[in-house]
Length: 347
Image (cartoon, rainbow, N blue to C red; front, side):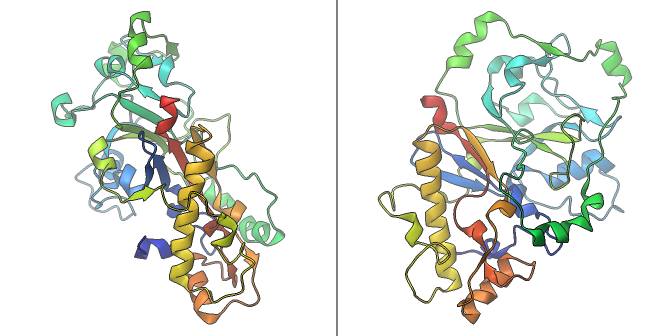
């Protein structure tokens, strides 16, 4: 396993809030032999998002959006009351039930045959194929462990600035009014059952995510989101996380915050061992257990005091944890962020 510059990026910023790295996504491949890590830029096309929000002619907007080389394709979005396009609609302009509710489900040929493509985008150009819809809005990363007083103090000052803006009422275009746009859910015809039970679907992903994933939301309100298509070819580009190594290893021995062994831990050694732990966390507790999806907030696995840390390790800590704590970042102790298990459909 190799170490890259991205491995040093922090999950938690100096204000105690999550960074974009917290949106990383592990995909366990259908063959069950390994997984890939999708970073945020891999499944969100910031350039296309920028163009849909502000227009291609707007060069005055200076944001983190735009100018990335993502192979993901933006196909559906709702950014505010008037800027929206709903791709997955039926002929009755309703949302299909097979894509409503599950965190991970199948996108069938019937869904694509009834889809409404964005204006100026041809179906031939996108060449969308059946695959899997992963709704990250359902994987909320809610806190599941008691926060420390220190974390709470850091966040109180900035929480108001981290709240997302809900969308209250959708304004329909004339074209949408002409189609007889309605709100609600429709049921696919019974004869698409073979498409729903098909286990030979390629690993094409339709990833639903909030437009402002690092901001807070209330469960009873509707917030800006978008859907990107990531083809199976794009999924093949990241390095594979192999599940074969360490199948019998006690994971408690691999990291300084868990190991009882007294030794010198270099920063690269911690990173490499963390990747080994992550691989077996995915293999044992998701693939083998048949778990489809999961999410762990980095704030829930952060921080374990280690007074004997050497200066090299402290340097490593300062790179992965910009809050300034001289502790081993416990977000390194296993798989954090979000997980989707495509192998589970073969169970």
